[in-house]
Length: 278
Image (cartoon, rainbow, N blue to C red; front, top):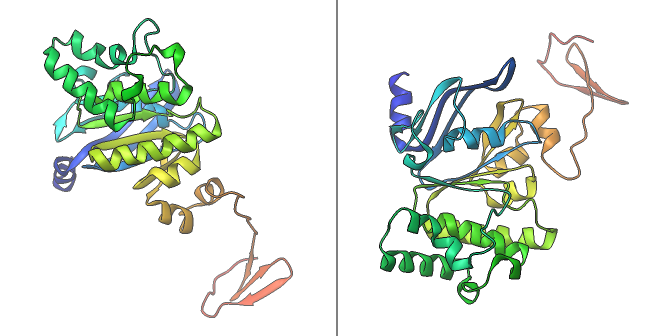
């Protein structure tokens, strides 16, 4: 790692260097580099199978890397246990304990860690207020809507007061109206907390509305990393141009001959182009 990379790693909240992940002969991630700034909301965007959730699992320590390193707040956590990384993760599935109340689900991890009851109560109350769950604390998951259950899952992560929150397609199981409502709540939560958040989705609307920056992925590689405005208005390659936008961008194959470019029936002269081939 050169000196510039060392400096970037120390300043970043999460840094990934040369990440490879192979399952047998299948290369899932290939030489991936990524820096996530302190307090940034980064979205990993791509179609199914592009490797975005796998990147999140690598950051969380849920899979062993084939090569590369991962740093969180300047510490090399490549081989650290998930519990020692200062992260928490919200999954697509709510994974709530059905026999416990909302309060019980949110406090379960803290109780297992032996935290004092007073501190647990303070943290649960704070998270419930932020997520508007105060009237629901005594209910069990069966008595909650899908959106309420997902807020409880987010609250369970929130009470741990970690440096980095990881979201793996948390809204995929919800209907369109609930997804829109929860997007607003997640954005508001981020603005209140200011923690680093890394969010995986295949939904470009979620990416464009939530992200400070978007990493568009394909085949285990980042095709483009930039702000929503940059990704939308200045795509760096055909894949990004085609993937972002609804309806999708139209493509017209030009023909070059000398200093002239032909698009269908239109012929345009571009001085000093030169060197073009039919």
